Every structure is written in C-alpha cells, then in structure tokens.
Image 1: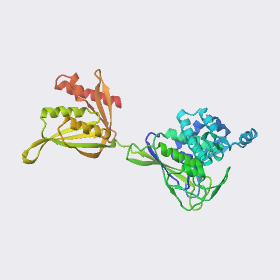
Image 2: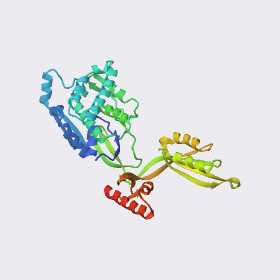
Image 3: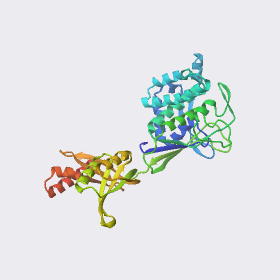
Length: 408
C-alpha cells in the first residue's frame, strides 16, 4: 500500500501533538492505521489501557482523534506500588521498549524519539540524559503516542517528511515543574532551527511529543525518487482542546509518484571536437570511453569547419556521479584541449533486463505507455550463438518472445 508514497506533508493548522500526528496518518491511511493498532495488541503496556481511533467533527472539518485511555484501576495499582505512571525514568522506558515484541526497526524508531526528548530535558535541567525522569510525557498515553508513531514511521518507510511553519502559541502551561512559558523549555529546544509563525492564538500549540516527532522526521527525511508527484490521500488529526476561530487540527497530505511508464533523471553531455588525431587512435579512445560504467553513450559526428577543414565531434552522455572521472578520461584518450559540459534532463521508459537460454543471452524489457511491454535482445549476444542472418533473426525473435512471456 505504501510502496509508492514519496512524501507526506503536515499542515500545523492548530498545532501538533503525538496523538494528532497518529490520528492524521490513520485518517489518511486507514488500512495502515488499522494494521498499526493490531500490531500494538501484543505490547505488554497496551493491556493497561485502550487504544482507538474516534471519528470527530468540529463543525467545520471531519477527521479522527487518537484516544489512548489508561484504565483507572491500572493507575491506582501503579500508584499503590509507588510507581506513579506520570513519573517514569527514561532508562526504564528504554528497557520496556527493548524487551517488547516490536520489530527491531520499530524499537529503534521509538528509542530515537525518546532519546531526542530526553536530551532536550537533560539540557533544560542541567543533568545527564540517563538521569532524566519524564513527567507528563511519562504518562501512559504519551508513551503509546510515541510507540504508535514509531510503527507508522517504520511501515511507511524511507520518504520525504515535510511540515509547515510551527505555531508559537503563547501564555503559560502548568507542569510537574510548575508554571512554565509556552513553548515549554524542552519544546523550545526541540524547535530550534525550524520555521515558526505567530498567528496570535495563545495556548500550547506544539507539545513536547509533537516537537520531538518533527525533529526526528526532519533528520531522517529522504528526497522523493520522482519529481512527478500527486496528492493521493488526505487526513485530519484533531487535538482534544478547542481553539478560538480555527480548527485544532493537523492536516496530512500524502504524495505518491504518478503511475507513469516514464521516469525522469539528470545527466551530463560532454561535447568536443578533434582535428589532429588519426581515426585509428580516435577509435581506440572512443572504445575506452564507452567501457567506462558512467558513460551512457558516445556519439561520433563528422563536421566541416572553416576553410573546409574536416574534424570529428564527440558527444558523450554521462551519469552525473561519473562526470569528473569521464572528463579526465577524455583528456587521456583524445587530443582535445577543452570540453563543453551541459546538464540535461531526460525522460526514459521503465526498463529491466533478463538473461535467457543456455548462453545467458541478455534481453532488455521496456514498459511503454498504456501498459504494453517491448523486448530487445542484445545483438552481440545473438551473434555469438548464431551463424547467418536468418538464424540471428530467428534466435532474436524467439528470445524476445520468451522474455515477454516470462515477464507477463
């Protein structure tokens, strides 16, 4: 389901908190949202409460809320044993995660989230990270927010995560450390380097869990593989508070690559002329250039210059990462004194290759617009197993048809 997702963007209309992040993704990707909750059922901590998505409509927009509610008796039980659920050591949370039945990659995402927040808290209070004790974020629902978020991040995979400017909010918030300004100190540290906006609406608009998720996703974000994207899904995740004049919602936009037979990439074109190298020497140089793995193709053109002088123009199509090496090779293999280099974009069909028959003949397959596919056998391989024109034609057609049937 998520294989074509290239980018997910979040509009922080009302702000962001861990539960809003989860709800917006669940609303945009309902199948994935259901899968994530089913996976959470095997987590020992999940039995302490209830996880569910609730439909929500604020009178303007509809979407989901993520409800992580701890059982009342569980709170009493924990408190009775002197282990208040709102005061949890960072090291204990790490131990719980490491001993969980989550996939290793999910555990790592969750640990990374808690680590970022622990580092911010340690900086605020002037203590070592291992000595950090979470208060509000140590609550059961906040732990669930991070764990469910980690599952979403892992399942969606390596994509581009982007966010609109973060609303500053304003005023104060009551915490276990007393009344603190908004953004709270640890949240402000996590928000460093991110674009912010002051829309005049007070209150805590970005929570510690929300800021942590943004900081983490920005650090692992990957640019899309395709420049041709379209909005494939949208979702709204609501917070529990009401804001004056706007919806307290986090909007999620999912961008996927268009279902197209063509792909785009960038290459370089090297062009130069030769008029003082014999054809035999130049032929050897061109063949050496063609053998370089970064060279796509070499074109050789006869041209006439001033006074009717004849010379040879070479055009070399080069992969961008190999440009420097191929330029140096041009100076080694030819007598040219200078190169002209142009960056060019190209559209190419999606291609693959198969090796067929006893002699592993190479056959290229191309997907054409409309879903049709074409096949082309390598003529050098065909010539090596064929004698005479008619046999080459017969072998070529047979192998190409075989390749198409195998790929069907």
